[in-house]
Amino acid sequence: MRTYDTLIEIGIKLSAEKDLSKLLNIILEDACKLCKADAGTFYLRNDNKLEFRVSRNLTLEEKMGKKNFLESIAPHALLISNKSIAGWSAKNKKTLNIKDLNNIKNCPYCHNTEFEEKTGYRCKSMLTVPIIDRENELVGVFQLINKTGKWEITSFSKADEKLAESLASQAAVAIRNAQLTDELKSAQLETIFVLGEAAEYKDKETGDHIKRVATFSKIIAETLKLDDNLIETIYRGSPLHDIGKIGIPDNILNKPGKLDPHEWEIMKEHTTLGYKLLKDSQSEVIKTAAVIAYTHHERWDGKGYPRGLKGEKIPLVGRIVALSDFFDALTSERPYRKKRFPLSKTFAMIEEDRGKHFCPKTTDAFFKSIKHIEKISDYFTKTSHLTPPSP
Ligand code: C2E
Ligand code: SIN
Ligand code: SIN
Ligand code: FE
Ligand code: FE
Image (cartoon, rainbow, N blue to C red; front, side, top):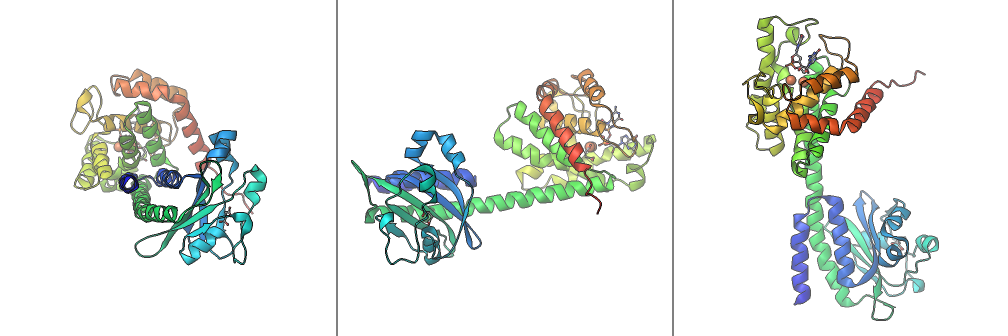
């Protein structure tokens, strides 16, 4: 009964974890604990290969420290074929319970001793379990190594096989969910950057402006110690802050000089326009992007636009992007101003505007992370201006 409860608990824990790397770590740890294995390895399938993802080894971690142990394992992959143990288990979708690795006879696979020669760690018993999803597709494989008995290394039992297999079927569902979440997230991020770039393109921008604004906003949010979810939402939402520029006529957007009052009124519409485009989304990220588009030109002293909101009435996300957008705009070339402002001059302007244009605590967070911001600014400037060598 206790084991049954443990399995249910594990199932609940696994389904709650959406981060794939963390999930794989938890699965391997639980499998090792459940079957009393001293060591274990996790391979995730990619096409016809098994890619090494996670490893643990109580004996070696004790001996050399967890960090050194993890660093000692080079990334590697195995072909899904009968030649290796993990490969065989993956190819045949069968659990393989080997009592003694030094005594494998008449088998297509052989035991790779490279790791043992390198570390001096001896592998004796090994339980290899394929992870198969509901469509009967192989997700990956985990290997448990060296069953710890009372006094010595023994072999894994039939009961261990059953336990490990039921863990594997729960793991399959959780891994597929996490992979799907990953895929959706990267599809979303890609779409956001493409859209943001469309607005930028129209704005005759060069380089990585929206990536920089996203990165600076993230750094400020981190320094403000906002919660991880919100930090990521800001990172993902901020590239769309100027999406409303899509609706501004080219002759205004790209006017080389100063805008006349009528043009300026139209220009300011990019905030409301962006908000209208994004506000009805179901997605938390896009909804936040709508708020950012709407409020990134408000000012702390209430003299901004489009609504003239003041102080804390301006959503924090808008206050953050107002600052990173300003910083990035000044240190970049604009259609209406060819020269960039030097960093030192820009910093002085921001400091002068603390509590006027910019929210004080956001400004403080900006200056607290100034080294990091300078480095990023530098990195993007250098890399985005690299041209391929001429033949
Ligand atoms: P943007 O080019 O992305 O600039 C964002 C913000 O950075 C500006 O918001 C402003 O706060 C700051 N900024 C950029 N360049 C300068 C500068 O040379 N001096 C100062 N003091 N601040 C600067 P703002 O002013 O609300 O403008 C919003 C958008 O309107 C700008 O986005 C740009 O697309 C357009 N815009 C603003 N002024 C002009 C202009 O004189 N000519 C043209 N063609 N467009 C303009
Ligand atoms: C394999 O499954 O063949 C690689 C791991 C090992 O044999 O120790
Ligand atoms: C844009 O190019 O408009 C986005 C970055 C910025 O506002 O400086
Ligand atoms: Fe803007
Ligand atoms: Fe902008």
